[in-house]
Image (cartoon, rainbow over all chains, first blue to last red; front, side, top):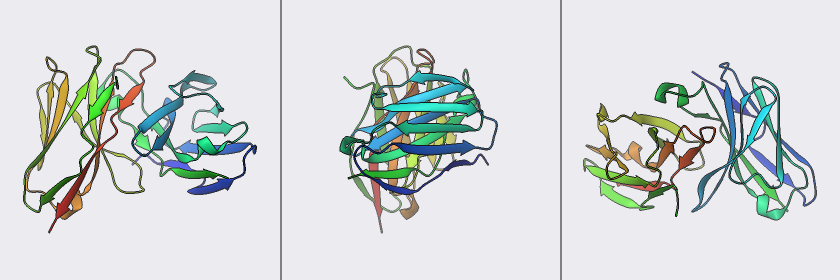
Length: 116
Length: 111
């Protein structure tokens, strides 16, 4: 089975801190994604990457940046954490694009981030 | 207008009941469709892909209606373990393949 590992399950940070969320997948997937999930809003895409060093903005990229230096690792960076970034952050990966089989998303177990 | 809309529920049903969820999507160019299941405080997990011809996996049946732009999920003989939130997911395969998630439909199966 595909394994997507997020570095922390729970994280508490202070306003203004720089926050790093790490995600590693072990199945040589091309695509990796960062979502945040908030009650009533569903999952919203922050950034995704379809190749090493490639990144694309999602629907809510403001206040975030990403890094993909190696295929298996996709990092989400909160440059200066704010209270409205308190959320559940979910990393996902998929094999590729073009068919439903390739597009299946595999999620990490999530990081619940609280910014105080 | 949201890309993908679902009735949030909750749907409260007794064990053994049949329950159906619908999900509508706004982009007629959408190409691939999925149902994911999410347990409380857990990550979403793929339940099934949805194909134009419809597909069945045990007690679960998914249907796609392109003309009306909706997909459905039917669960027969509900089990307590089916209690979860069911997320509808749509991919247009354009604009770098962004997946659009519904907010989810909560199902509670009662003894």
